[in-house]
Length: 67
Image 1 (tube, rainbow, N blue to C red):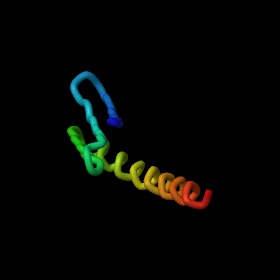
Image 2: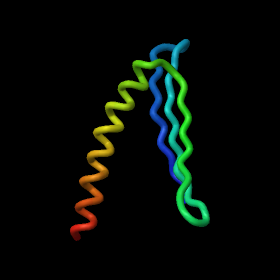
Image 3: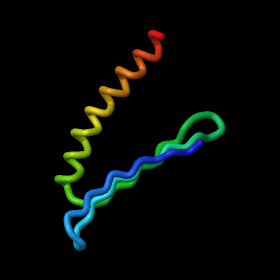
């Protein structure tokens, strides 16, 4: 199994930022590969969003465990 997420921001044709995260299953677990290029403002916005997403995922995990 393999899935991935791409966040991309294009300010104009000269400047683009991109974060790529790919998660794939291997024989005994999972591998996460990350790549990033772009400006620091985009990265800061991504880190802020990542914190929110992690909190949502933690709540979702708790709910699954309770059911």
